[in-house]
Image (tube, rainbow, N blue to C red; front, top):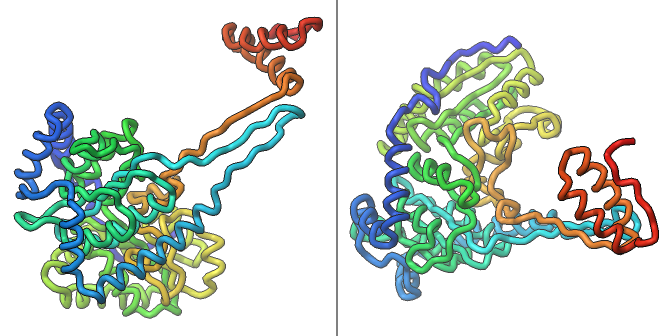
Length: 435
């Protein structure tokens, strides 16, 4: 493969060494031991907040009154789209039963987890869309207890639009607590909340590490790193649109990689010229992130042809993958490793991030090579069951006894033996492991 790097990243997501693990482990241990009081102490320390922790109906109504009507309509529009898509996903999961041998029936049953903890970032940016994405999918999946957790702003509380979105989408409780302490509160069932069976939603490195450490005790959507995006573009692409899409994703964070893969050098060079200009035109709060992300983490790669472009993309397994190239059906069929795919100039990652209906909680750092993003399926337990007649159990019991003895598991074998002797007392069976 003859990839040519016109721009090569100088840092990776693993370059940012820190004491995150040690800090998170200490906070989790203290809160588990100290319960509500310890969590409140951390909320006071990190959130600078001492207000209502579990929002009352009156507080939710007061927050809703502060949200402009136009924004309410936009939130409701996004919620409707996410709900519609999630309901379609739910339709792909079905209970079934099959007669594996005559008289022996096995089946599948999909059962939603009881309690979902949905983390909604609220620091530098108020992630209204994260409330929509996480709470809506949990609701459609059928979770009976849904907690939305978001960091309050000092002396103010959770952003009203986040509260409104979480409420509209079906949150049963809204927890005003951020970071590790919020994740811990949902996991340990503090403040009279049900203990979460699964934790979902994006967050900073401390939230991500807390979820990683708690995985196994609870389920999680995924272990998330910095958000990343890749654009595949050929000569038909508009360099300005490509550049704008790269910049739009680079503003997520200083360590958010963006990559351009193309078979057209002229396009690549023009995009590289445009990106710094578009970054300079951003508001300062966005500009700093985009500048660092483009400088340290971005890459521009020129390939020989579209097959090499596709192979490069699959190697990177990006969280977000945009195709601005001819023959979109070819790309849809060929590409296999991505969190979410955006085909054609007429759609963009921001649409999926905010309002189009697909989920924006997606695998990062190459995890798209083995998993997809958040969906109703993440909240579902796919369990199995079986039932048999005595005749149906007979061949299964015979095979089980012989296989178990070959493995040296005599206790297993005897659970089959006892049934054969009970159901067919007048018959003799060869239940030894040897021929």
